[in-house]
Image (cartoon, rainbow, N blue to C red; front, side, top):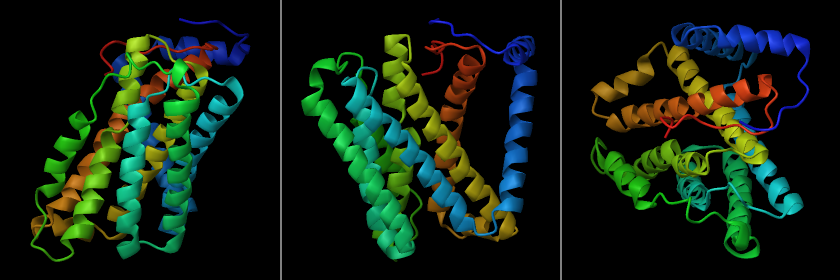
Length: 275
């Protein structure tokens, strides 16, 4: 599975204990931990906007890992250009949507992430293209963009603010599955090099925080927020579905990432059924 590093004895014991648990027990423990973290966020973070900002910062941290990888190691091996292009697309759409609904800080954070992502795309396409695993990055973009377009067009109530609601759902839908090309490349390569693993894990953390933000919003409004679905605003249901899909996609990866860290593995691999 990869080169082993010296692992502290307590971590070895934890690793053995985790491996001895059944899948059902592991899933139950993961759900409990996730719920506890949501409760902590609810208690500690008084302003809901901060949770969103933390999610954006986690994504930005992942991008910084990529910038370090491309600048220092001079290789883009293991990175999916398709995922970076999808990221640039949904960030552009979301920034356009933010001008109607969100404070300036959200526009600023997304703009910084977008510029960083465009730099990563440039490096992969031009400066480091000789190290790009193009044959393994083989998921066509229309596999994501076309179904996302259909989802975004479903359930929009009338033409009032149609453009901004469409941009919101379309960007959310693309974001929900933008990591799939990266996971497909990882699966094709059979192994995950460390920087790529750190990047995808950062996306997982960002997605958990974003999902927690939705849960807290529903709790704070005592479910009133969800009444918009029954009033015909199905884009709300679409946005929630997108959050759930991406959370489950990345939760599986994060499990294997944490497992590899506990076991002291420098390289991690994913089971064939992940993608």
